[in-house]
Length: 208
Image (tube, rainbow, N blue to C red; front, side, top):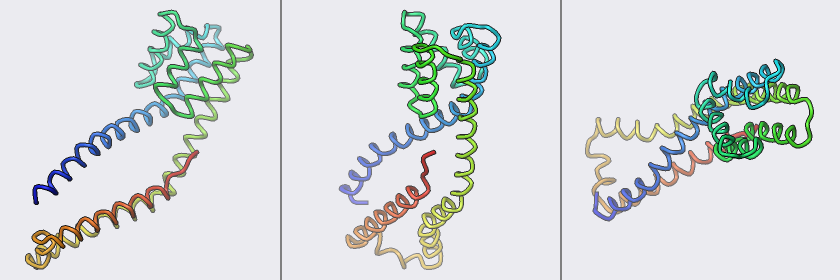
């Protein structure tokens, strides 16, 4: 590969690969958090119904539920230990995990802290909403699996065909790798494939 193209590919990889890695780690963290959040809310409901204060109920969650919810709720308690109010500490939870489900939880706690009301009933309704949203997301994932499979097949087909052609006729695709016009067409093909995969990916994204 010419030095100029190597520099371009290297710069693009140095910029995109870390973003891709961090994005995948963030999505994995958020998925695990959402899977455990309804259980945490229900644990708070049981604590409140049994007569425990909200702080003690959150402390139970910080000790018993799975990661990463346990660490995030423990951080809420740490924020209170340094003098922040419950509303301020819960708001920091949303800043660290900016998801709609977490925002629902923050709003319920904030409203109860300011206006009072039946906290256990409000959190019970929230837990039911969270589980319904999770069920809906699972249905959407199942419905969009066909489109995802099509995208994978279409994206992998050029590489499979190129490999098979190279095995049967090793010199047939040589101009793509040895001439300037070949590099140009490879770049155009990569751009068009990226655009197509991006469009297909956006077509199967749904907001619940």
